Length: 121
Image 1 (cartoon, rainbow, N blue to C red):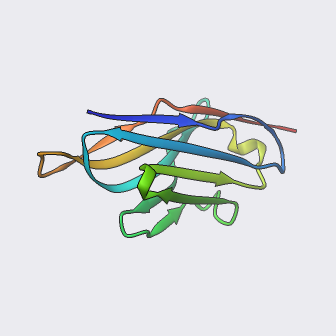
Image 2: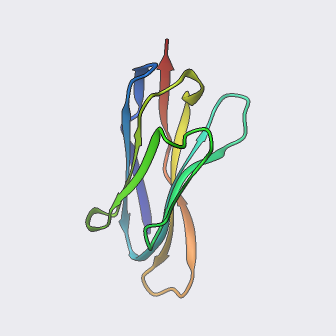
């Protein structure tokens, strides 16, 4: 199976920085994409940033210029570097990995457990 373990959440002051990580493990043949989503109270879950297997990245307009997504392929880990944090960034952050498991010819989506990021002022 595939397991995702997230870490890095916590309390940070407005204007500060935080780095999230998500490590994938299990019977993975290939990871096609990795991404970060977030969900604030009373709001829909939204895509924050994504990175494809080829390294192409995309960001939500609300975080563009402040957040950076990256990956370490050797560790099957995706990171989200969050700078210049605002109160509006407060949410539960979830990582998602699109991966092909060993022995399969198709991909599935796998989700992390979520990590809380709270930005205080």
